[in-house]
Picture (cartoon, rainbow, N blue to C red):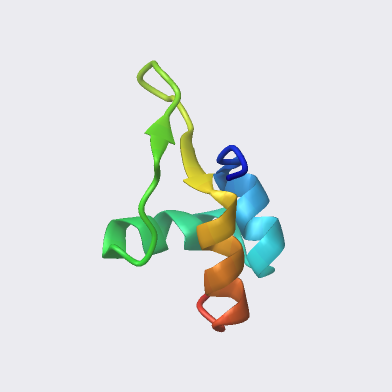
Length: 61
């Protein structure tokens, strides 16, 4: 089993071809779930690359 690769929102946006704010809205809507958050008040949410690529192939954006 490969180690989990984590992506910040700007990379998710690049893969999906959308704006970073769209990724934020999808998180708030429960479409995607971050697997980690960088510590701190403004820490980035991190997403599982495999899940993001699976959703991209399924047409979710």
